Image (cartoon, rainbow, N blue to C red; front, side, top):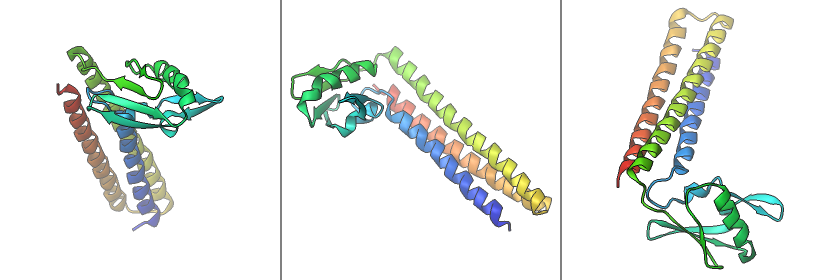
Amino acid sequence: MSEAIEELLLLCEEKMEKAVTQMKREFASVRTGRANPGILDKVSVDYYGVPTPLRQMSQVSVAEGTTLVITPYDKSIIKEIEKALIKAELGITPNSDGICIRLPFPPLTEERRKATAKEVKKYGEDAKVAVRNVRRDITDDVKKVEKSENLSEDVAKDYQDKIQKLTDKYTGIVDSLVAEKEKEVLTV
C-alpha cells in the first residue's frame, strides 16, 4: 500500500472533521429560544482602540435559561460593551444597570423559528459542500500519486472507495447534527 495515499486519507478525514467543527461553531451563533453564550463569540468590543472579544473581557452567565448576564471585569467599559452588542445586531436589546448587562431572549415567533431553521439548513449545506470539495481535492491527489507510483487501477479504486466512505460518513454526521439543531430551533 502506498504511504503517500495513506497520508492523503488521514488528511482527508482531518479536513472533513474541520468542516463539521466549523458548522458546529456556526450553530453556536444561531439564536434559539434559549440563552446561549455562544451567540456572543463574534462580538468584539473597542477596548482602548483595540477590538477585543467580549468573552475575554467579561464573565458571561445564563440566568433563568432565557437571559444572558454579562459582567465586565472593568466596569468602565459597560457603555462600549452596550455599543458593541447593538452593533452586532443580535436582535436583542441590552439592559444595563451600571454593574452588568442583561440580554433577555424573547421567545421566537413561529416565523422566526422557520427562518432560523432555514439558516441551520444553509450551514449544513455549506458543510456538505466543504466535505465534497475535500473529497474532490483528495481524489485528484490520489490520481496524481497513482500515476507517479504506477499503482494498479484496483488499488486506486480501493482508495477512491475509502474516500467515498469517509465522505458518506461525514455527510451523515452533518445531516444528523442539522436535524438535531432544527428540532431544537422548532421546539417551542
